[in-house]
Each structure stands twice: as C-alpha cells, then as structure tokens.
Image (cartoon, rainbow, N blue to C red):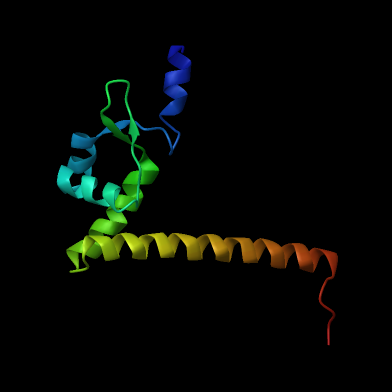
Length: 112
C-alpha cells in the first residue's frame, strides 16, 4: 500500500480507522458501551492484525444514535433494535422512492 492509498482511505466512511479507546472518547461513552452494542449486533467492528477492534465513521454514527437513545432511558438492547429498524425503514423508503421515480419515467402521470 502506498502513502496515496492510505490518504484516500481517510475519506472512506467504512474504513476502520478508530481504535476502541478513541471511538469511546469521541462518543463520550465507555468501551463497555461499545462492547454492549457489538454484542447486541448493532455494529460489528473489524479487527486489526493484532485482534484489536477498529471502528469506521459510519459505525460511530450508528453508535452515537444508540447512545442518544440510551441517554434518554432506553435499555441498550432496545436502543440497538430501534436503530436497526430505523435504518431498515430508511432503506425501504429510499427503494420505494427509486421505484416511484422509475415508474413515473416510464408512465408519466396524465394531467386532469
């Protein structure tokens, strides 16, 4: 890997750039919280060659949403399920919008 390749990865939301300690610090939470949302299968951090957890920016955004729910009194497991369902709903809405646009471009609505 060249220096240019490493530099380009800094813009990649899915690149596992953050250690568990740094991720917890950025989120203002504990490493135990990150382990708990991992056990609840909300996020699955990648592992370094040495076996250490590494988190991407995308995973940190998901973890931040779960933390927000937990901070408002939602149990961790329920918060994780809510975040998963929110993500699934957003994806379904995106797909529906694409289908609607495709259908309209094939058969444009008639003016009444």
